[in-house]
Image 1 (cartoon, chains in turn purple, red):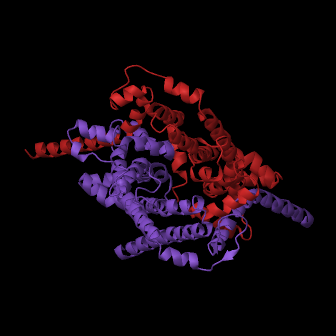
Image 2 (cartoon, chains in turn brown, red):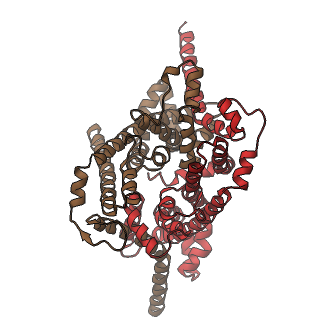
Image 3 (cartoon, chains in turn cyan, red):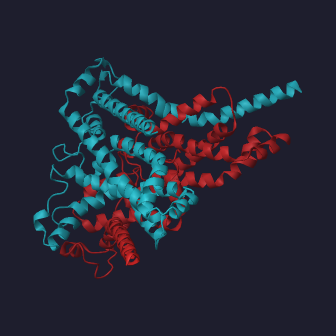
Length: 300
Length: 281
């Protein structure tokens, strides 16, 4: 008996190992080890050819602190964080509340609002590149035909507005995604609560404020963290539509890091930038989770 | 009198609701519809008016990009890379999710936490080491340069989803197997894995869309058109044909329409799949 149990244990242990090894080999080799290597590379001046040899300590990080472009990019990243939160969450919540109510054609509308999420970011980026195109672009043509020729501009060519033009597209793409998250959460709220509210004579606004929004807040918090981390590491649409230009007006840390690394081949500096991005992303989401916890404790 | 006033307010509210829905409908749908009908206009027609519907359906743009450009190659590459990656991700995360969901052993919590932290890591922080690693293994410019990172980066969230699913399966089913003297591998293969098919299909969808649309690895780890996938392919393509609007619209349409068709038919599962990784309670 004892012998048999031992044998089974051995078999079980073997199975556990067999089932975990492939996952962890991939994960450790291509995710975990590179993070540490990235930190190590950031202490070198290195053009990427051969192994890194010129150890310069923290010099790359010192340079970052004095790098105007980095601060510009960080500022743009923070704009992306705020505009994404303000431009995606309220409309997404609003649409989710309407579409979970009694409304005609709601499944059709949900399908349409989610559709931008299906299309690849690259296709989306070029689609809007041609919407914003100054001469033949859809937007300027529309403005002209409405007699608003004064409002036309190079939406991606004008440094004062390019970032917001791209941000509109980011919101366009993600509102449907967050809307669906919120719809799932609202549909999970027990109907009895709404019935009780109705019997008590609550207006629909009161019901939303007292029942839907409070019960939505855990999902909202998750959504905000997703959006913040996503905004800090954002790359795709900016790279496709403006590659950070004009005049760095849409430069983000991720695009700057990419240019430094793979266009100027300053791989040590690129590694340092990547590590800063990592720290900022983790830091901001921890900060947000901490703040919302304090907020909750205070309101309780 | 007062009843009438309430009705009036109610109607106004209803009107505003539908107005907002209509505005969002136009905002979300029109750019896509515009793209689709522009792709069957000739270049001259596009220059004449960007709004106008096509006078006749002109498929020459599509004939060009499917007949004499790299586009079919990109499509094939995307299929190869996506199918291989999704296969690897789903297989590995099903095995690992089963262990983390059903088996307690010393250190299992720690291992799981280490893996799950991977969901938070921005890809940029691994980009340079992986570039060097893949280059040194002579994997740069091969399908593996994409498949291997795609598996590594999508396994954490997929394990998370699978573990959640396996935890919900009643313990009795498993116990019955053990009483019959099944080994753990048999329990997985004969009982657990078949039960998890709905979750596996969610994983397939979730990962297929993620991998199919992935840009930054494909951009960084490949250079040749022979291996490039659609997202990077489109970038090359637009660089080449910048002012040939017809070709570009046809390429963008070709890249998007198959996904949208699949989406319209399987939308319930697809929406569930694409949002599965986001809901962590």
